[in-house]
Image (cartoon, rainbow over all chains, first blue to last red):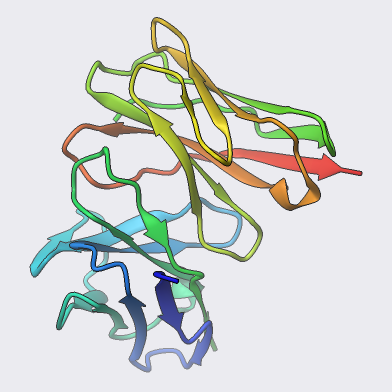
Length: 114
Length: 110
């Protein structure tokens, strides 16, 4: 089945140690998103790619970066994780940017910072 | 984006219809109403969306009032697996991002 895949499902990193989360999709969608969801809160958009065009949300910390080497893959890099970055990170895709297109989410990667 | 208001929580008996309301009184003419749900420890799942007309798919029905100021998501025969947080989201046309609110925690009980 076509889907959005996130690896790993659980990631533990040390305070200040760079970490990369990965997302892949078999939907061939143009747009890929990264959301952060802290405990008991709603998902919050960090940034998204339309093809190779990167769109950062205004309040996303500089500590968070992203790469999209091809249509299928997108990475979230946290350069110096702090304790406050512990969260579920969700990847999503959509065919286009028009709001008539729904977003499809992966299962998420739960990040723990020790 | 228009703000949405949803009840914090709702209960439903298994097999009965679950009717989840959403108020979006400031919605504009080009804004879609979307519903997603998130089962515990999983990613959000798309349910349904609409602009003006009522919509139905294999998961649910979406009823939008004529003035578009509110809508209701209907799960016709709720099961235990429908226990989740349900998010009502209003999206501006030609703008791709989703802004999640607090949602409604639906608990389906035997």
